[in-house]
Amino acid sequence: MTSEPPQTPAWDYTLHIPHDPLAPRIARRTLRTILAAYEVHELTDTAELLTSELVTNAHRYARGPASVRIRRDGKRLRVSVWDTDPALPNLTGGAAPDPDDERGRGLGLIRSCADDWGGFTLGETPFGGLGGKLLWFELGAARHV
View (spheres, rainbow, N blue to C red):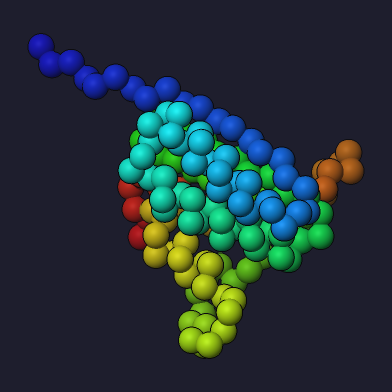
């Protein structure tokens, strides 16, 4: 009789952040604390880097608040970042940034480091919701080709 390894319980945290230059640092530290508490050490450095990229872009391009959702389901970790700007970045790739450019490498990092990722625009809700966009990445999942 074979026994299956115990399932990792799913969990989900959401961090609401104001439009503040400290938001990327706070998001990184919060994510690191959560992953350490659940002993998800193997994904921490990559998740921290990619989360920082998404939150930095939310702060740079949106003029309102943002939120970070960190969810673990089995071996898969999904981090989603919502912000108030509905304009999506170029999700299909395109030309690499000039080596002297200070910007434009974040989605390239996500493309090369995440197992899966994406984004979509959120329309306003019938009750006056904020709309905006949601960008996300997954680690620890079967790689999407």
